[in-house]
Image (tube, rainbow, N blue to C red):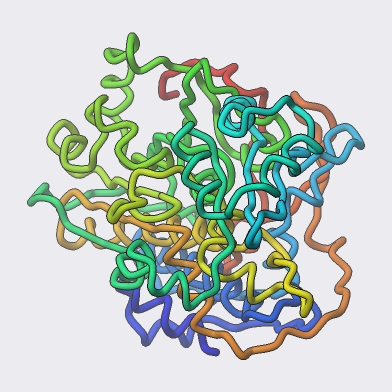
Length: 452
């Protein structure tokens, strides 16, 4: 499976540049029935090549050589498992975020956030007790439970096979879209960026990125842009606190501010007026009432790059639904493929849809900036976890190899406002490029909502 050869053209990249990429293959990492190792390598490789290409545009030199090491990729794809905050390992999934037996199969819920947990319990009419949840779901059909929980604003998805997802109306919609959707919105003038130096080479230096994302995929994208020199300001609503350890893992290189868009529109418009990139990762349509749809943003900030992330796509019957990596694995058939011979669903060796899609989104932004330097125009880049899942499933039949690879060389430690951190280094590596972030993550929401 030469996944990079399919991903790079999907980003609009010149196939001739693929010769600049070398790989270090380590068959023991990310073992799976699906080609997770190969797809993860391709997503990171495409991002690194997009960064190297933009770096060449800004230095006037040749495209630096890119090196993708499976060990570095695998370590970064489970970065949340390697994170230590003051010597403490984080909790990644809450007790009610798991698979449950139903009357006719399986359903998976996501209840890491308090508001999602409350809606799940309300939909089932049970107290906060795993036993009560198990009993309630055991009496229901999986798809009936799925609809009931979503109707209450919670998150639950019934287990489907790849064939069932392919026949589902949302599955059909998703399969008909490109892996990375790219669109020019207007005729804004060409972007002019100052030359950059080479020690280190920071292709995104001078770019201001407004980060309106949560959880993993979107923050991975903006964390990567921060590594590459962008000034990234993450903005969250005060009433929706992020999980602290999750924020620490994806907060490297960024600042974090709180802003209620319903009352702080003037502040937001000031941020937008100086932003080069706006990255959104909320449920599709949720931010439209604030004028944050791509065309509305481009009208107020001509030349902006809008990067949109969603779970299921921004179209079809599930286009307005929330979703997470674990749920997309269940709906699209990945969990069925990875399951046991006894019929119990399984999981990928990493939240590979989140991490892979995050690197694809960052790559899309970098390529859009480069295209603007030549042809101008406001741009939009869209990715969806479900579309990444479909791409991964195209490689069914490739059987992974199990094994262990030492990860110490891809981990680092540093002090931070949160305490001493152990963390995974970025796998995005190219000649002359940065190897670590310029700043450690800070506490959620403690920075000012302004550019520095």
